Image (cartoon, rainbow, N blue to C red):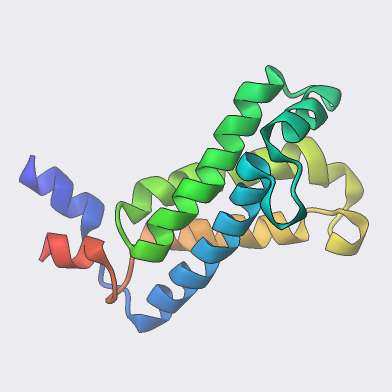
Length: 144
């Protein structure tokens, strides 16, 4: 069990990944808080659920709660550097779903609601999944 935990938490990444992880985590938290709580001009769960249903993602309320939770709590995990790899997996999945179901048809550029931004956030999540949390993280401290 200890070996499994160490492989999950171990990281050789440096300070740069730590900085990238924190900034990306704050970004995800902001987007998740729009979906879950309606903060920062967001629509909250009811509004996001209605929109998801309208584009064929059902059941809308559950999917809105899952997307918002992945972004908010996954982002929080990135910020504090705890269980970063599982959080990165959930964030990567959320970004892949966003790209496929919402942004792909609009092309690349974010100015046209394209997949550019979701792709970059997904790529950062993949890097964090591969590299781990970095030097300034609880994961590294726990793994020793």
